[in-house]
Length: 293
Image (spheres, rainbow, N blue to C red):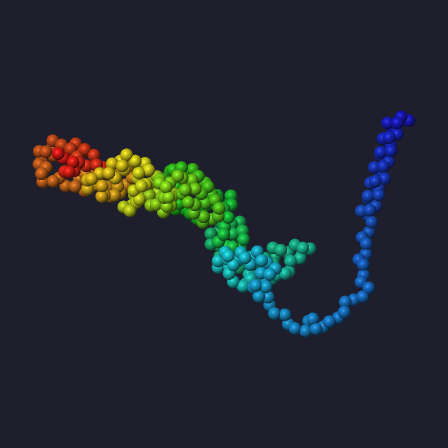
């Protein structure tokens, strides 16, 4: 017999012996539980009193995370734990009865979001922090079911915001309002977010709405030459806010919206020069009498 065949047979015999011994070990009957030599000493005084129900603070001793959640963000769920947990300390891993003993949202709540969204824990993942709803992929896909006005605005007034998923801005949790500066450069250093929203409705940002008290440094960001002229003019227009004349962004008003032709302007003169700025040159830096020599 060749040495190769001899070695192969040795290996096969070794594997067979190993498997047989392993099988015997697994098949061996369980060892009997060791019995105590003596029973514990009876002490009836241990059960002489009637136990008092646990306080909420005592619940927190074993469930510190749940206690902290309710303390910090419990909202309307800040009441006695036993109002929801009528059955507790009854979980049995052999019965796998966790779902049976957990309270059901429908015990107290009617479906607030209609028949379409009834699986509460998909969004309210932690019932001990009911208003802290993380922005999950599933939640991001159903925003328009509740926020119809915002969805309608985004569709009716297309902008770059329309192309973004709701979770791009409201990414942290449901109800999170981001700062505009998270994505956008301010019009001027130190600009407060409130001034952004004065002009730009967030779900239709191109529908710019000017308020009369708008910070005029905002105008300077896009119209620096005009702003510089207006800022330095000695005419009465230097005391008038941009938004007083430009009531809508991009609107170029007519002089006659504010002014009536002075008595010194005859009908013939007005017919010869129907455009005020033919003579008054620059509406943002009008000539003044002090400049005349």
